[in-house]
Structures are given as C-alpha cells and as structure tokens.
Length: 65
Image: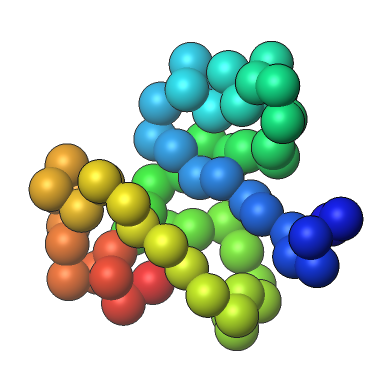
C-alpha cells in the first residue's frame, strides 16, 4: 500500500503461493484457478498475467475472468 496500490497474487500452485509470504517484500497470495477467480466482480483496476497464459488450460474462460 505504500506505493498507492494493493497487490493480490494468484497461483494454481500452493507451494508458490505460500512462498510469497517469505519473500523479502511479502505479498498476499491465494491458490485459485484462473478460470474461476475467488474475487467479486469488478474488484480490480488492472490484472497482469505475466508468463502464465501458456500454462492455462482454459484460456478463453481465464482471460474472460
């Protein structure tokens, strides 16, 4: 929040989501499927999918989500 934004990391791998808590700049992370995000509609101003779309099974539904 110090930079004026809040970040929520979402990963399908519980190990990677858990590791965000031990990073030198810890982030909140949840384990979820990109095609069914556990978030209310229109909650985010921006979403970034960096180096992940090539690993998603249901690409159309995930991008729509």
